[in-house]
Length: 431
Image (cartoon, rainbow, N blue to C red; front, side, top):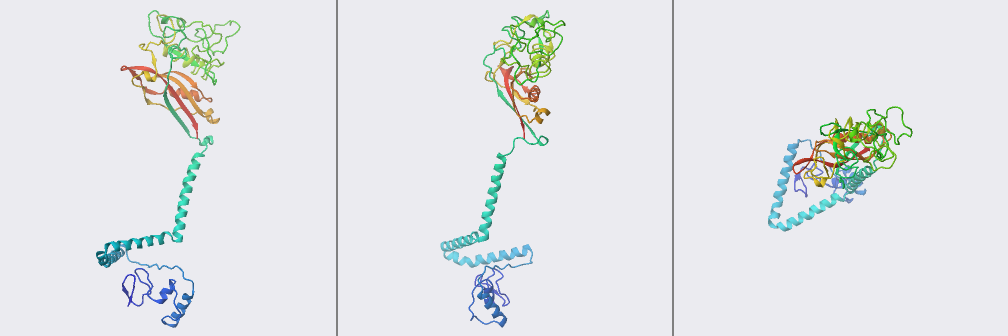
């Protein structure tokens, strides 16, 4: 029988290594793991002695024995648990006799084992390599993210439309570019100095509107509206020099609400722009709407609204006589438009459809921001749309169309719904 000095177990003579921890049990095993053996060691058989001498003359190499065991997992686990129990049983007398010293020795031994494991050449190299690869991957992702191109091939582009809502402050309600739809100072609508709403005998509220443009980059020019007429036609930047023989075309507006303003050019009297322009809208009118009218609406009328006349919403003739101009600055006026700080509760957006990219803008890789000034009305509709900053390629029109589809809960003041100015920003980006 052979005894292992490491685990204090006995094994049969045929074992050359300890089955538990691989400790050499004879001279030949010691030579295999790299221990020098004197030439006059104990004699084995002739072949064993020759093999011992050969290994003893070579340079020692690191060698670890791998013990293969075909037993199942549970039996091997049981063996290991028995070994742990045996080790604890062997260590118990020392622990009981000198707990402090035993703990110190075990700590030192564990530190030595950890040091030998960590400082092993392969372990240290592998650890450094793994850390280097992880840091390289993180740095590459950061650099690639910063260097990502903003534009790519049109066929592979993705559209990101961001809509921002910012309260817009209008310092002067009497400004002709403000909430009104005329150019005077008394009535709600119209261009003269009256408080009526139109030619109808009985007083009633006028409504309607129009818009247009020729895709010009700047806002429509400041000027006078053409004469009232049921004949729609594109509005020129300058009036004709010679008197026309045919009936004159103009905008669809109640004559009681129109006035020959002292301006040499056709245009929007609310505008501050002095650049010759029909505006970014469509169909030949002036403004940023659609039609042969003037303003931000749709049709042949003037201002916000649809299908002609003036006053907002859908076309309806008004009554009561000659009309004045924009809403006054009386905060008790039900048509007064407030700024964000003037209301008790701001408008709450329920849905805000995103604008679509136009094909023209996509082909030309047009990007940027369209800024619109609008009114979130007390009726829950977006009105008085004006362009603060436009983009070519039809993106301004796309933004305006999206703005008209916004649904919201109106702002309130003293418990009552009121209209409030808002600024909309639509960011068009191609990635």
